[in-house]
Structures are given as structure tokens and as C-alpha cells.
Image (cartoon, rainbow, N blue to C red; front, side, top):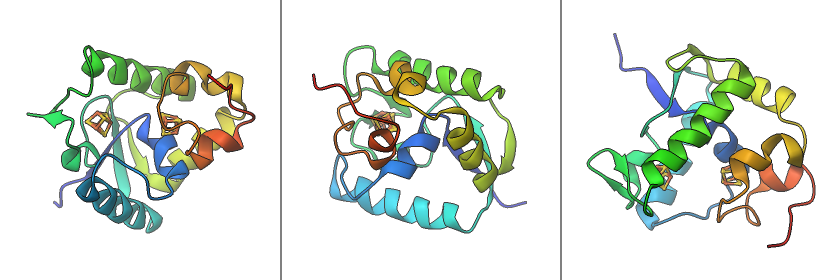
Length: 138
Ligand code: SF4
Ligand code: SF4
């Protein structure tokens, strides 16, 4: 059986806001490919650890996010928040587009996502975050 595509939960949000910015050329190229793949609506597994997007990120050191001090825990907390809000368990499998629809049904405004995206450096460039309402300017 082919390896299932694993997506960390908060990346279900990020992939919808991507417009070509990222941490490195490789990161952007890989993210673009992942999004293209997601467009074909594959089966995916939603996880709370490094995923296919992290695999080309310069902050991924040995499968652990080390962007900043405590990043591994911070991003995991974002994933857990998303799982909780979507009422999903870590490791749930399903069609990519069903998860994206669930995200967009449950997380509709800036209050819904404040505790997930609140400190993300990409907020002002993220089309998905912007579409949830006016981002706070700080
Ligand atoms: S604001 Fe950041 S964490 Fe939130 S969806 Fe956009 S890129 Fe992801
Ligand atoms: S910053 Fe961390 S969570 Fe985000 S893509 Fe890179 S390794 Fe993954």
C-alpha cells in the first residue's frame, strides 16, 4: 500500500493561505507540490508532528521543529488546538477536501483562530488568516 500523505493539523489552515512565501526556496517548492497533490483529493492522515511540509523546512532538525526555543511544543499545541476545534483525533484519516471543508466550516472568524494563528509570523501574508477577518496589527 502506498504511503499515506501525512499532514499536521494546523497545516490544514496554512495550505489554504499560501501564496508563495516560505522559509526557503526548497520549502516553497515542496509546499507548492504538496498543495497540488492535495488538489487531487488524496486520502490523508492528520497528525500532530512533523509532516510532508516540514520535510523540506530548514527549521526541521531530525524530524523536530526547532524554529525557536520551544517551537516543537508550540507547533504541536497549534495542532492540538486544531484537532480539538475540529473534533478529530490525532491520526484520523480521510479525504483531504473533507478536512479542508471541515476547517472552513468550523473556523470562520478571527476569534476562532486567534489561539492557533495569533503569534504566527505569516499572518499578514496568509490569505486564509486574512479571510477570517481583520488581523490585529501587532
Ligand atoms: S496565519 Fe500562520 S498558522 Fe495561521 S493559517 Fe496562516 S500560516 Fe498557518
Ligand atoms: S517551522 Fe516547524 S512546523 Fe513549520 S514547517 Fe518548519 S518545521 Fe514544520
